[in-house]
Length: 253
Ligand SMILES: NC(=O)c1ccc[n+]([C@@H]2O[C@H](COP(=O)([O-])OP(=O)(O)OC[C@H]3O[C@@H](n4cnc5c(N)ncnc54)[C@H](O)[C@@H]3O)[C@@H](O)[C@H]2O)c1
Image (tube, rainbow, N blue to C red):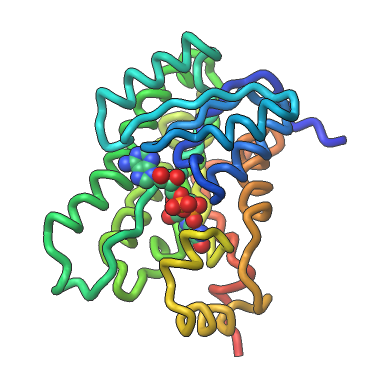
């Protein structure tokens, strides 16, 4: 069995209430013996149950990540309940605003920035001090191919997904000499309920054809990447953007 070297550390995974990527990440890290805190705008009882049923440790914290006070209070509570967070998976985000740039009302665009960019920053800031104190930390940002290539009709989402790359690269620089790594995953189309309902059937078909492997990704394939980037096994990797997309960015013909 592979020892990932992170047993008994405390990980915070945001956006793990449903059956999407956040839950898959939480289960995968729990399987490495990591204590899991999940934070979502909704309660996450099933995620906690799935982990504790298998002998793991998990607790649920409800917070809107765009609200600084809610995030700070939750992270403080995590410290009391489980210990200081030194592994952070910034997974929560919204993709609710779709339309051509000129048609998107400013309030809707700004709400995406509030959740995806400012929310991610709120959570990271609340955990950063613990990583600095521990002289060890792992930060994974969940970006998207929309953040690296742009996304037609997804200007606000793409803007926010690009913004977390800048934050991760800067934290990689600022954390480097304290053994804190910060990396970004840019998934292609992964078979979460969110992706399968947010994208129209004809769009999904076109995206599958543009993917070298001619299939969508499985939740496990992102969770395995998250586990690696959160572990001791990736100790010399920082400031990177890793596309996990089945070759969607390659010259497919
Ligand atoms: N599924 C894909 O194909 C795909 C592709 C590229 C990137 N991603 C990224 O992966 C991540 C997870 O995607 P998913 O498909 O599992 O989506 P999802 O919608 O199932 O998960 C997002 C979670 O974030 C939570 N959330 C939303 N707003 C919040 C807020 N204000 N505060 C706290 N929690 C909030 C939701 O409740 C939900 O549980 C997202 O960051 C997404 O952008 C997914």
